Length: 248
Image 1 (cartoon, one colour):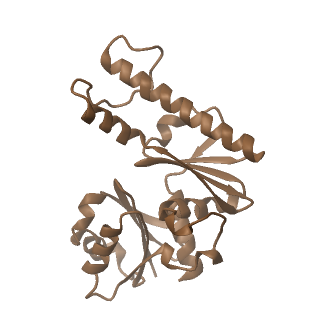
Image 2 (cartoon, helix red, strand yellow):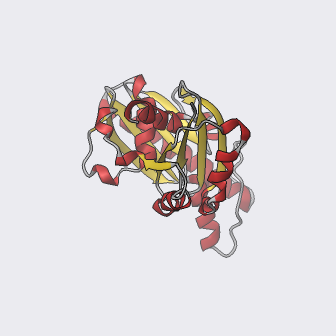
């Protein structure tokens, strides 16, 4: 028996097929906007290596319209689609925050994926840059900052003369031209933002945290974070897989 799970983000969607031990066999990545096409899910289902799928699919989703569209496209099939927040997650992790319904499913999945480390900080470089705190295996909330890529796009879009840039880590000094000046602003700016937030979380909680990075800029910023960090691009789907294993 195989299992299908997915993480629907604002920018990208990751769908994984798991084996009967809930380990990732195959991963598929799409731009989320393309997930409005129902044939993407169906094409994954039809792939030769994906036969014998459990008819229950589990997703984390921060884009309700895409999740609804997936359900709609599979309505007349044998498959049933669930979202992790529709399940009794307190059986998997204690969530010590107000207004739990407001927490993004991806952040909850990250916390569940990191729970085994007991005290952990998960930095997710997605459309937003999120910092999620797990203390004594309890999800305690976190910090949400602007996403790197979105900030770059918005600055270029809102100005007449500033170009869209691809970040370079080779920033040794302030810029002598517009592109280098922009690169310095984003690299040094996020270096300060990330390290400052990490330091504040550690100092206010007086804990030693394992720090996990995930998302598009995880490897880029790994080099400039002052603490020891680990990159795990599957931490979110590991959390979803854990929910599937325990609750379905």
